Image (tube, rainbow, N blue to C red):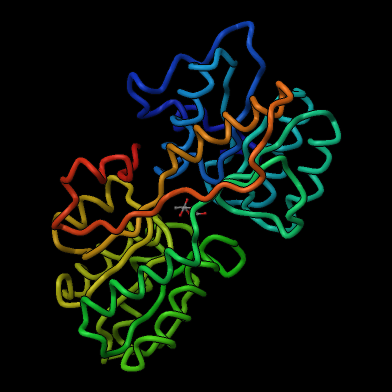
Length: 316
Ligand code: T6T
């Protein structure tokens, strides 16, 4: 894809009948700018936003780049700004570099909802909607401790050390281990890029460097998709315990197949719905909720088929 290219194909995928039609021709236009258009998390968020826009009679479209990429998202925001939509929901891929472009978008008259990731300047946007990622990291640590009986060495695989969500998860994971599980030691927090391949190849290196390894925590869905492959290639599937953030279809398949032991899942569909609700509130001069925290779920082989967790399984 060229820089700034719009991956509408990926964004059209997977919503089914609940995805809505793209809204009424008379409604206000709402645009979703994803962090990574091919990621099940953002595909699901888009489905929630699109269904809500359709329900409320608003026009909806979606854009973004097909990878987690700062210049591409800056250029997507610049293009969106020129179209002057009434509202935008955006997941900024960098807490600082996107601030200028989003401020310009706002000062051009567009209402902005910040979803999932955050900006350093918390005053940008009419609302911020996300999971409690620090708490999610703590849940991951508690789950890992249970799986390995509270002892051994673990590593963390993360796309980078700049993304606000994954950083908060790692912080929560570390805090929980140091306060509750003295027998668990973190050997490495490794940046592998936002791709499954990056995570898969890091697994072999980590296993060789740390022969005492008992567990791996992956901080998002791309890293979670790769970890199973890496363990399989190293012949360690099942013997190293894995806790992964997110619940994309490949991650759920890995959970069911035994390569992964637990998923800490978010509610991206609900994030998308609520962002559209808040944008429409702002546009119709109704009260806006400035900060909304959405639910997390711990998913294991025991509850993965339970109807109560169905809304936490992502689409693709
Ligand atoms: O974990 C989600 C999202 O919350 C995070 O900000 C980036 O990665 C994901 O999209 C999953 O890949």
